[in-house]
Every structure is written in structure tokens, then in C-alpha cells.
Image (cartoon, rainbow, N blue to C red; front, side):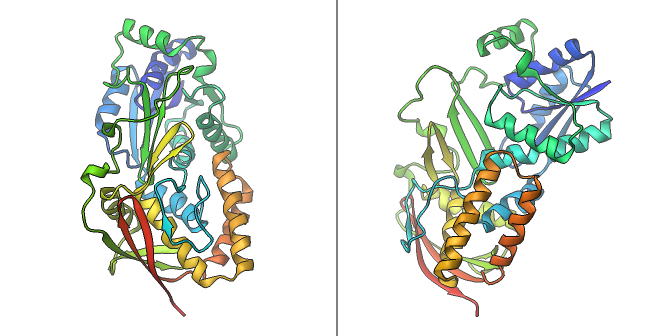
Length: 359
């Protein structure tokens, strides 16, 4: 009997491997989805095998994630916080960006089911904490795609604190990541990077050290001169940067480098910090192009559509039938969203200089 485990390489998912083997008397197949984490996943695979997994799959999901989740959400103008839509052409670091962590958790569902079919697994397991948003999104995706999926939530049967799990893992001499004792947690993909405070019952620090940030530079390292950008959209899809045609993934990576160097895209969202340089620029440019094309009635409808889309992502409803209805509305609204937006990035701000829509 085999069980497929969503494997992040962290303490909880590593400790879940011997627990599943002993409790379920099953072979464990670890599955890690690479969404552009910017870290060496070969070490994650080796850790899963050393912890007792019979196989460890590392799946490159970057292109599919960008094309099938990030791009539709961008075209729907989805944000986690309200950004300017009233004609203001400047976005500061506090503006919202797309939910990188929520989308990443959603993307994991189809991959787990695909590997489960290949491995003929009887169940899909995860080590998400009880009642966490990550768990809700993952399980919602699994059951929407395959209602008969048997899901094992390892955390429900662990009556232990993180310290207890760590102590048990060390007693079992499990291979653990080097940051296992850190107080912060990081989740990253090609659309952004989210950091939050791990310790329950303790207040998150008011200020985070600059060493904690990876996509955005600190003020002391910002370039003196602004960067000039021109983003081309065709039917709502970004297709070129500064006149150079690019794939969506390449365009994201280029914008991350340029905008991140100027500190763009760093924002605090509740107790978490998000870095999303490319998302911030693209959402600003896309919104500006739409504003130049649409009348007020269409803009109001699009805003309500965007809010509904964001709620769907946050609640794990990406694979529900209602998204097809939303996508049809987005597709219709994007038919005229074609043109070039010129922007400047400087000192953590994005400014729209001009918008030229195609007739």
C-alpha cells in the first residue's frame, strides 16, 4: 500500500514520513512541486529519501503555474489588498499584490493527484496544521478535482507542539533542514515570497532584518537612477518588456530583477511580509491599461469580478465550477486590453508615465 505525501522538506512533512509508515503501514511517496522557490530542491529530495520515503518526486511546475494560475489571476486584476484604481498613477510599497502563497498551495492539488494515480496510491497525505488556510486550500482542490480522494491530515493525529515534534525527530535522527529552529517561515514561488512568524502565542517582530528579504533590496542599495519600463499587453496578457518579446515566465523573472533592485513590491499584510516586485509592476500596468480603455460601468463590474476571484482563491475554490463562469467574464473583458504601458520604478515606487492602447 502506498500513500502520496505533500512534501515541503520542512520539519512537519519530514517527521510525517516515518509516522505514516508506522501508523498506516504504508510506503510513502514524497512529492515536492517546484514553483520557482529559488532553492536547491535536490537536497529536499534527498532528505525525503533519508527520512524513509520509497520514492521522492520533484516536479517542475513553474511554467504550468505561471500559465494556468498566475496569468488568469493577473488578467482578473486580483489583489490581496485594495490598490489605487481612482486615477492615481503612483503605487507605494504598501499596495497589495496577488496572493502568491494561496496560489502556490492551490497548484499542489493536481500534481498530488497525478502522482497518486501513477503510483497507485490509496491516499494523499499532508502535514498542514489543523484549520490553517493552507490545509483548506489544498483539501478543497483535491476534493474538487477528485471527490473520492482519501485525505490523511497528519497534523490531526499529532497531539504535540512543534517543540515535541522536533524533539521526536531528533530522537529518530531524521534529516532536518538547517533552518528548523528559525522563528520565521518562508513560502516562495515565481509570483512572490511570503514570510510569517512561526511561534504561536508570541508577537511578531515590528521590524524584520534586511537579511530576511530576498527579492527586494534595502534603501541603502537602491540605484540612484530610475528604471524605465515598457510592458506590452495583448488581450490582457503581458507579451513583451521594453520591446523584447518574452514568455510570461521570462518576463516575470526580468521584472523581479529590475523592480526588486529598486525595492518595489515589499509590503506588510497582517503579520506577514510579502515580496512581489514583478506582480506589483504588472498589476499596476494592467490596471492602468484597463482604465484607459474601459468606461466607468465596465470598471465597476470588473472590480466586483476581481473581488470575487480573490475570494475564490483565498477559500480554495479555484477548481470549482464557478471559476469557469468567472473566467468567461474575464476573457470577454480582456478582448480590448491591448497596448503598451510605460512605467518608472524608483525608490520603492512604480509610476505610470503613459498608456497607449491599440485601436
